[in-house]
Image (cartoon, rainbow, N blue to C red; front, side, top):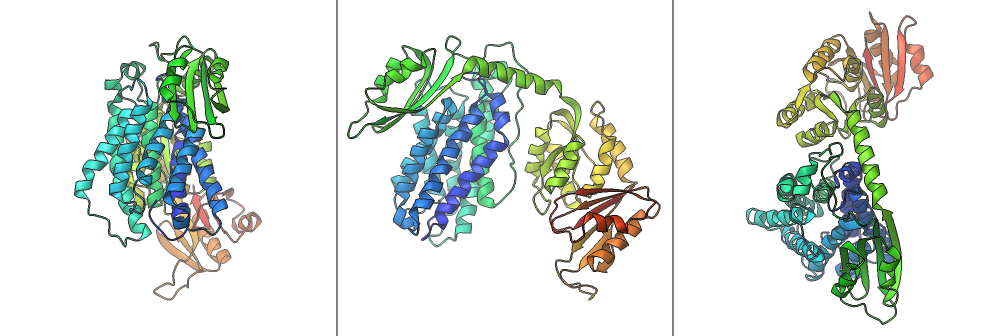
Length: 555
């Protein structure tokens, strides 16, 4: 949350938190499926999302009520205190409560240094305080979990400070964002390594064949923050897939059924007691007890068969609210069934297509491919492609880069992956669609890519787009339509005449012509149909791609 004299900083902080939420939402089901400790109830992703949603809602309320007040007038203390309280009240389950304590610990550090620029040094100190607060919240900390991961991340960023130049006092917001993103990327890398090491530290994870869901979730959260700071799409964090149900024991609370969560707020001038006294009472009726907060507000989590007895302990202490009771027996059964169903559709070979445009993405999915959003410029990083490869539920993967600019990054990702990965020679999204018909799930990636490349050799591609700048040879001006067949510019001028020229060139000797309309395409379906020769079959789709009005392919 870099300094500013306006609510721009508040909006930037919200954008970073929103980036974390987007990342968690993207991997939510995956995080849920990895959840085996301390209970295999499959809700870690849900709990983390609910906690961050609560923080965002509080920021939105603050922004709405602050009116014209600047950030300096609101005060950093008020902002971080409200966010910490929102995290506490929104927390659910072990993971949610621990995330709330991470946020609270970071908030305490930020509040303790008013007026200090939020730079990498302060971020490192806040992460260290967050890790300490999280450890302190758990009665019997287990290594290999989110606690270990957060501590390893904090240690890594502290060590990295020695190699970073101090942030100038007059750094622009973009410069501040870049510096903080670079530091948090160090945390993400260290966190991924810590997550991979977790099963060696916690036997229940190794027996179940998974990494810790909470540790993985916090790495995903930080990766989302990095993406938001850099204005990027997607994540560079490797995916982890839970295997089908293990016969090994997977949770400690075998004698207790209900995961019980609630908040307690002191009434009037009263003050709540020390959390330790409540913990001892709750352990008489359950386990996995967490009681965190302060003398004004507490958040309580317990696994018990008597939720009403748990809340009754606090009825004379303050107001009990936000009661949430989940049946862990049902949750565990749901998780096992979900994972078994996913395992049943696991394939030998799957396909990852790099695309842009909601309509095109849907076309690829309808043909069985998994998709990676390449952003408006269709230029994802190597690590984004690697993460996409890991998201495909198959032993081997074929990647359709769909752009010459992406081919090298896709090759690099293929070499980095532990799976067998082959990259097809698709240089256009519309051509990649035509090649997908060659894929069979029970063939190897090598066999599939060979057949796809054979089909791609017989596909001709074209496009029509508005010119982004005037032609150096004076043939067209900015905004004119320009038409290509493969890499050759063949027409320019008005949209209709340019599209007609490309259609005619591709239709010659072809039986099937596919036209995919993009954002702002100035000719409707009827107009396009009128341009296609009668002896050529037309497939017309809405692709939603930016920059290019029409993508065409001929077979």
